[in-house]
Amino acid sequence: MKKIIVVVLFFSTTNLFGQCCLENNEFKAFFFNHIDNVEAYTLGRKNSQNEVVSWRMFKESIDEIGNYCEVSYDEMSNYSFQYPNLSVFESDKKKWLDWYEKNKCNDLKWIE
Image 1: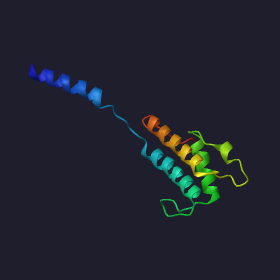
Image 2 (image 1 turned 90 degrees about the vertical axis):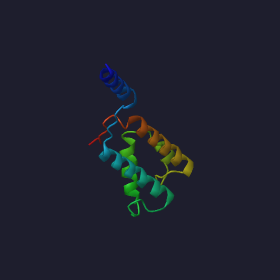
Image 3 (image 1 turned 180 degrees about the vertical axis):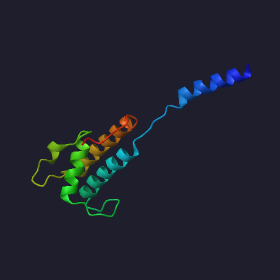
Image 4 (image 1 turned 180 degrees about the horizontal axis):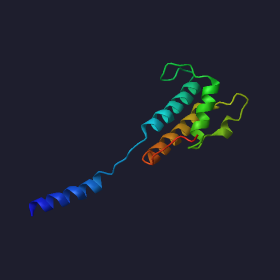
């Protein structure tokens, strides 16, 4: 009888607390790499790979992120296509990170 109770308790607690989330680590790496590029370009520094982010890399990263998340393109519709100020970028970055947290367990894949 004890064995049955232990087995039942094990499976019920596993179902309650063991909600398994299988993140696509490849997607995660690419997604956060694009955020890193946008941040580096916006702040005028090198990215985490110690690369200078060109305008082209910035644009490609913004477009990739924009396939999944809201990007403030209207705020960047200026002659240089960049964030007009840090607060607009920070607002977008928060949205991107929130989106990722909400969707990371949905077997995310890059749109090709």
